[in-house]
Image (tube, rainbow, N blue to C red; front, side):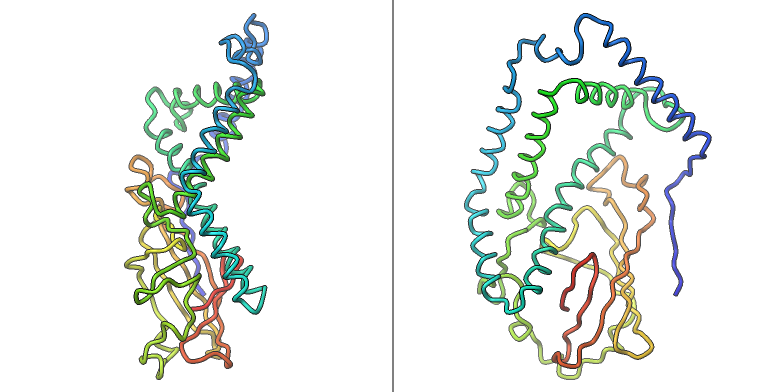
Amino acid sequence: MKLTFNPASPIVSEDINAQYADAFVELIEKVISSSSSSAASPGNFLSNLNISEGSLSFAAAVCGAIGVAIHAGAWSEFFTNLSVMKDNVADPTEFWDAFNFWIFFAVGHPLLQPILWISDVLHGSPGPMVFDLVPASFLLANIMFIGLTAFSKEFRNALNVAALSAFLTYVGAGLDGQGGLGDFNLQLNDSYKGQIVKGCPAYEDVRQPSMDNFDLDKYQGVWYEQKFHDWTQFKEVYDTTLDIKLTADRQGWIDDFGVKGPAPDSAKLSWDKSPVANGAHYFLFGRVDKNDPPGVLREKGFGVGKLH
């Protein structure tokens, strides 16, 4: 098996990394020492602005409650569908495998958004470069943010509440299919031939006559993703391929899942500077169960199992 690794470009030397780290620590120490000697300490910064204790956290909580309430119907439908799905699955392991798979993507999408945003801010920030790594304005903004977070309990609490609120609102929008998140469809219901399906449809419901003479050897080769519609995909990536090779006994296969990211539309200023701009590879492993009907393939990856 041939494996390739595409590192980030350009490579930064260890000496440059060490110089940057030392300078960064020294700069933080100077900021802390100068701030502690001043009359208006960072810990009292918000109180100096006449912001009452707990008001920021309360405001963040109210915004979060509104966000959850807007998608309350979708949340209710989700938990109802989840209950029905659990009752209809004979093996609890299969239910939890499917639910863990849902959690992986439900959490992954919201986490990617701030990462991509910060990346674009980094590469779009003005000012001279510090050690040819980051703009001075971006570094200064980070120091101010770290200082405010470190010394202001009120700000930390409000930030935690705001982050949780944003996460629940974003997932709620995915359950509703709203806010431009049509490809972030997290609802367990799906439509097949005009009927609503709870969770994944059964194989018998979607089986085609062409499966009668299914030839596993023809499953080998490189497959290119053309389109997707559900929550099991990431809209932030592109150029997705599957390179499938059967094992020697023809009872299993290795699936080299290749992907590039982020997509140019997701991070206009930084997409070509990503560590995986040249591609990343994840390996999935499949097997053939003789008790399954022709065309059913079992595959494991990302910590869960799934059927094809």
